[in-house]
Length: 178
Image (cartoon, rainbow, N blue to C red):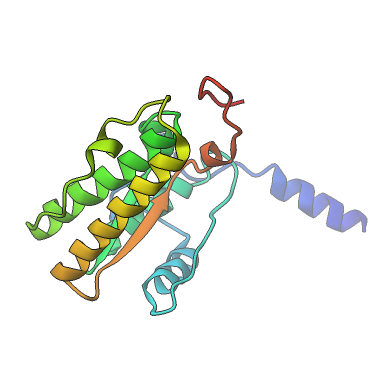
């Protein structure tokens, strides 16, 4: 057992051989994680798609891995890279942001327009009743997915959520994280 403890200790003290900072977007700079990237790619593109949760310590390459997946997924797969905090800290801001990102991404990649989002979604704020917002969000999402299927019956949305811990935090009355 003494040797095992030293080995584990030595491994845990090993420095990260990669330069870290901004997430990598360039495929030529992305090393390692080939098995993970391949497994996730196969899982999200098969007919009976699989969901994944990528966890790891800060600066361990999670965002770079998501960037690689986003780059490699081509139409009919619509890869939406989403960082919830970039939309704001409230429920309606996140889900409105997803709808808008989907609409813009499809327009950019296919040159075709998806339906506009409902006025109620576009103008929701912290005072908007959550049940009404959810009703309109679901209606708009179904409308957009129907529009996407008119562009291609094979089209599928792959939602890549970065910094998902935001979704696990409990909102306070003011909408800030606790």
